[in-house]
Each structure stands twice: as C-alpha cells, then as structure tokens.
Length: 142
Image 1 (cartoon, rainbow, N blue to C red):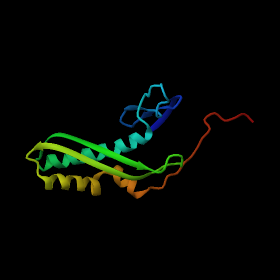
Image 2: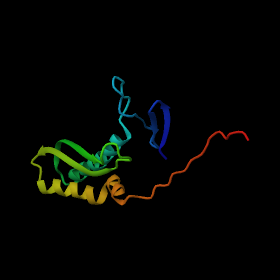
Image 3: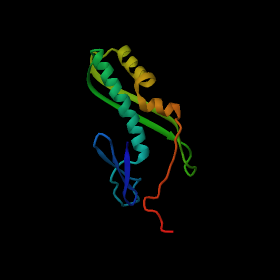
Image 4: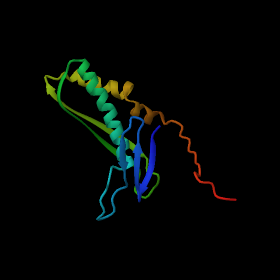
C-alpha cells in the first residue's frame, strides 16, 4: 500500500511498500521554493520510467548495446481554468543511443513496452474504477 501523509502547506510525503519516501509539492508560488515534483509530474514520470525499464530490459535481451537513453513525455491537458483538467494526449519519446543499434529492435522494444508490458500505460488506457473512501481518525464527541 502507498501511504501519502500531509507534511505542511501543500507538501505530502509518499511512503512506498519498498521503504522509499518521496515528497510531492504543488507548483511554487512566486518566490517560494518547491520541495518536490507535483503529483501530475510524477504521473508522467511514472509512465516514462515504467516504459524505460521495459525498453532497456528488452534491448539487453536482444543484445543491443545502449550507451545513452532517456524518455521524454509531453502531456497535453484540458484548458486552463476548467477542472479537473485531465490529460487529453500524452506523447512518449524514447531517445536511444548505442553501438550499431538495430532500428527494428528498438522499435519492437518500444512497441512491446507500449502494448504489452508497461503497467502504468496499460492502467491509464484501461481507465480503472476508482473508489474513494473517508474516515475521521478522531471521532467528534457526541
């Protein structure tokens, strides 16, 4: 289970089952520092990292020698001022460099990640049911 605890202001600390902590924050107000990525930034980063891990793994199995690799994600959201402003388009760009890379192998690795292996992409496409629940931790005296 992922636990997200309010820290202060708009800062939230995320604890993962693997024991890691990430601080999420809102976009900084003018002159204020930001202490972490926004939840929306992490959504795009999660998709990029998920796909990237697949691609690197597949290329290694295909004996492709990758020397440099990054994934860029451009997300297009609905109009400003209209909420909740979901993403209407996401473009995932894989930039791969290496020794004698086979373009067919790279294309196939990206395709396999995109269509078969990346859980984050598959989940976003599936639009799973989301159930919200709430609990008051300290009951109000009667």
